[in-house]
Length: 362
Image 1 (cartoon, rainbow, N blue to C red):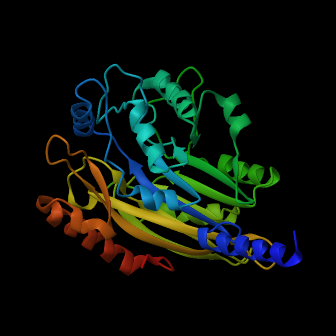
Image 2: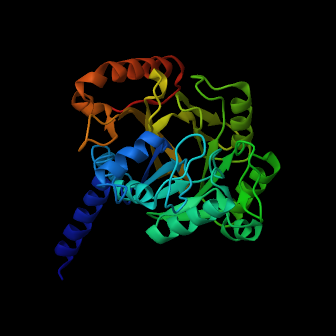
Image 3: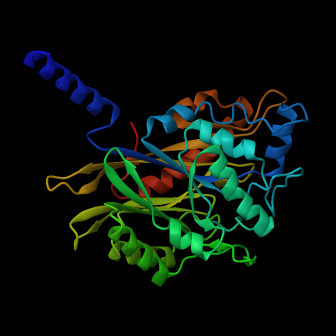
């Protein structure tokens, strides 16, 4: 092959990499709590003709946003109990087809350390892990025992040449204690610091801490969240993504002067999909974060933005629960447009008033 041809192919390759985000950096995407209330189960069974749980249509409108990311993360706030019966609040259990629908929508990593992970007992919590393995997705936060946790933590993923560590922790499990050795990664400053350090020793270049914290239904983070975020930044975390309150809370770029880098802190992404009814719980946020190597070759956060999304309820048979990105809000059923505006206006006020360095995607 001639030199000009080689140069042309190289140039085209570079241009393609710049367009799709590969070669120049990595685009991460995060959403909030993937819930599964009884009404969602009932509708999925109805759509499946009473024989299967069918989640067709739930994520089709948001899927292009998820698939466009290099790596997408959601909080799976239900155990996969295996049936034959499933349940909503207060003790959740969902069918495998729900997780499969999330996978097919483009999610790569499922977080399992949350206050509902033990709702259906240790057996269901363990089964959740084998089910996620079977459908071929990454998952972190709960483990069959302490030995498995030591073997699997830190979880490191090479994404387009950058080695990311992802860690997941929860404040609690609704008072349900793990039995028979089941391991849930709890918020423990000493253990978290150790695992961040272990991630660095294992070759992680960028550390993402995902965390279940805060007070439900409160639109601003509290002092405990801020203190823990500061602690994690001091330990070297590059990104902190939070959930649990079921409403959105602010997002901030915090400068780590000691290490000369910006750290993204998201206090709560709200709900991704649910059957919650109050205005602030009807949706959530989707956050995108861009990571690129700096002049010294170190991966750094270079940009972050957000968009809002809405969890619409079905309007009858043939209409499932459905997640709408804000750009398609005009398609939300007419009877729910008021609920969308109520949610979006409140979320926008919070973000406009309290976000630092994180703006809405244009």
